[in-house]
Length: 493
Ligand code: TRP
Image (cartoon, rainbow, N blue to C red; front, side):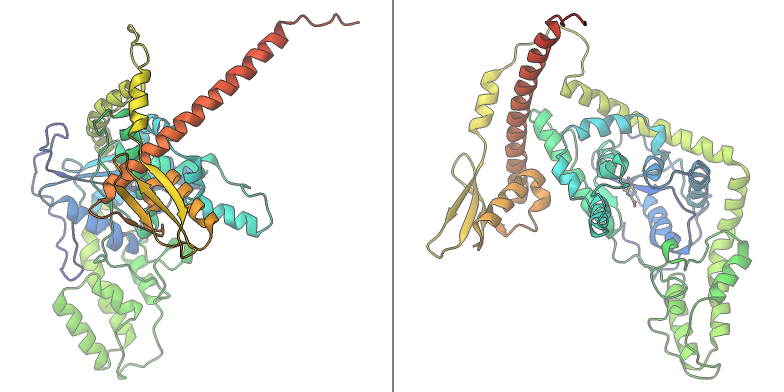
């Protein structure tokens, strides 16, 4: 999956035909890689270098099964302009296909064509701690901004934004993806997906794991392209170079606007760290990079340097731009590709969802077994427990002790007793996701997965207890109001 920017990128070779892997019979050793693209914008050169090219390259590697989808349900969270949603889906799909994504090889689909996704989202929503969603970055940033502005904490925040990570967890878990290539800003979401997967496995699995625990894959070798002004290329900075829009002229005009210093032709230039050279590097071979630097040192004018950049990039994207134009003129070809993708994706998702429905008790009507109280009692006896205490050094400590007495997690000294309590609470709600930040170390010879499982088990037991109490309370109120309703009202008069 590693993509090295030092290699030149041959144009997609669409002459070769590969066998389409059947997701149901693929050998279990295949690494399943899945990623989604939120469909709100139009891809620019930075998206091409940072996401499209490395992902298309990776999808051609043997032993990798790629799932790539248009996250159009996620797009609805950020955008309420139907025309923009429609256009962006089309443009993004056309860009990926033009860049060499082969829908026969990759499972390429729209999120909104997979009804199993919202269905799984609900099953996961029911086992997700609300407190954990309060800490999700996107929601937290929005609610913190509200507080800072003196507004109501949730002003303008939709449930879509709030539940964003659960929908994303469903995207990933529905296909049991092992690796999820994402940007750093998405790592927390993958941790949340792992956490909810663990919780669901524990709660309903009966020893069987329905879900693979996904891992974020961040590729530091993939170039982050600077934009016209040298900051990261991004639509929000309005500093992008278009990928296909505006044709060769659009590319040339944008490159002309790349900011350089004011050295004249003939003066030696310092290539390192300039936006122009960094963008050049993303498309050049090692030899081309050396030659470009040497020429700049020797006084190549910025105008000529820009011309060289344009021909280099144009040489690689012109053939794709032609395919792009062709696809945009025949959206039905894109539609066909996506329908094929949806069929392949649903062939994987459907059977898993059937199992999950069974597991949570959404079953056909047959004779129902009596509840097994004894089983839940044994489960309780096997729970690990948190212990909080104070040592002679005056510091507060906590530890997590397994039912057999093994110390699973041992805290370091904490000054305030209250903080020790807060950490215990956080470990209980957030599980593994809180482990890295917690001032505690794994017990000797104990692995992280064991601790993660123990945390999930505790949380489940506590949630079940709390739910039982709530239900008992609700039952009590309902019956008293039933009584009230049954009492005949005094005749009006
Ligand atoms: N949230 C991702 C982003 O904004 C897009 C996305 C949605 C995604 N579902 C996903 C990425 C599942 C990876 C896996 O970049």
